[in-house]
Length: 355
Image 1 (cartoon, one colour):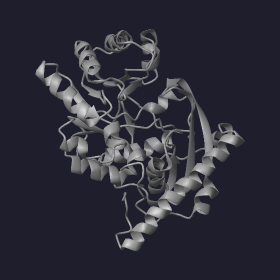
Image 2: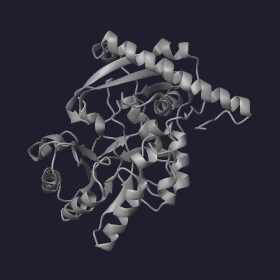
Image 3: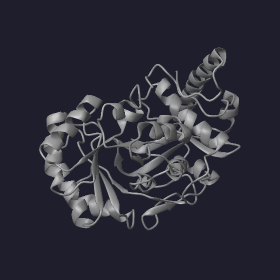
Image 4: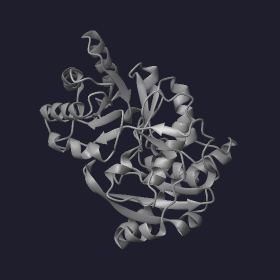
């Protein structure tokens, strides 16, 4: 969906006052820098079905952020589909740290069978990526290793980098270039030179004007799906079904409340061929639940996650940042309310996911 459109919840949108009544804004310290930040801010909501998380990154516009609010409303006011499985395999996540820090990062995840490694970090060189991925391979010789470039390369850079990294052994490469045409070209060139690396689309699915365009263009072998940016678990399930590609469920640097939604999606998919990127609570120095959703022997059990009053108080954001988030909530609620009204006027079904 484009920036000018909104995605809505799968239940009637609560009044703004109802959301504001339970909204809590926290700032959680990170163990390592991730996406350039050492503090993760998020707004939590409590509804009749439990807790929801609204945490679009600050640079996202209100229309894009509306999908995150739709997901939070689904979690807290509707709840999740009945699970097909009750334990979700997860990968460890290694940020763009120095290779020497890789063992320290991996140690926080315990035993895992898959690792996602961030690459193409601004200000770093390909040699840094090779060293980091090699360090992961040396620490976990039998693990499935995938890399995530967040669209940081152009096509020639991606082909060169993946050619070198393939020697270490890669399961797949996530979003090596920014656009769909580039993904298709990288995939074509890798096949042409015999480089055995699958291509996964992430940003091209969750930030594109059409989440299914990747599949239609033959630009990826699999897709990465995240609950909040896609507007909720049910909307993400629809996208996976329509795309017809294998899916990996990943997080958006969520607290355990957001991870709970990711687990619900992973638990509801008909097939789950890859370990999921849902172990990222290990990157936080603290969480907002007393019993965080973190990996145990390479998997996370599907269970509820409730915010702890003491932790909400301890990590409460400053008054200035709280006011910033509450004002953002007001604006984004307005975007969803307007979309809901347009659908009502058109006589369409109450469940809406964009216009």
